[in-house]
Amino acid sequence: MTSMHLSVGGLDAIRRGFEQAPDMTRRELLAAMTEGTLLVEREVKDGLPRVTGMTAASVTSDAFATALGVLGTVGSSQPSATFLELGTKPHMPPIEALVPWVKAVLGVEPKRARSVAFLVARKIARKGTKPRRVFEKAAAATEGQVLRMFENAAGRVAANLAGQAGGGA
Image (cartoon, one colour):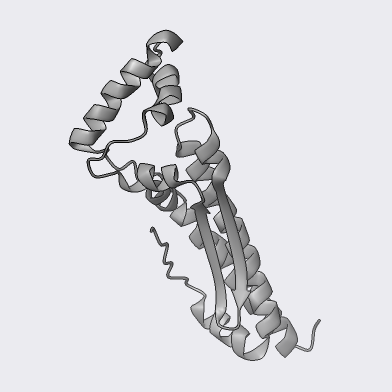
């Protein structure tokens, strides 16, 4: 599992926001988290191989607020996403599952696809597969943008608190 931990310059504003205007602060942080998770989701989908498109289609993001703050996740329900991210130890995969990959990636004609898939499966049985780290790379590639989203949210919280203190809206 890849996590993104950000050190936000406006942490003091966020702390004060939770003390003085928790609902507004949670709303601003949830908006930043939603935008950030959608950005990471798009980056993950762009980085996934497109054999059938099922793995990319399974990638989703979610953001939600709790009493203690906000949380965002980007993940997939497809086991293939885990295998792509982390790689696998040597094992004998199902040959039929490799046939679409053999046709699409290796360009093998349909009548030979099953026998080539068997050879690929044997290699996986001997060596496993290497990790692709698609989620990790997506988090690293978007970290600066996500940080700015949270810094902007902290700025909006600070501005709102200043408006409240000044007798404004």
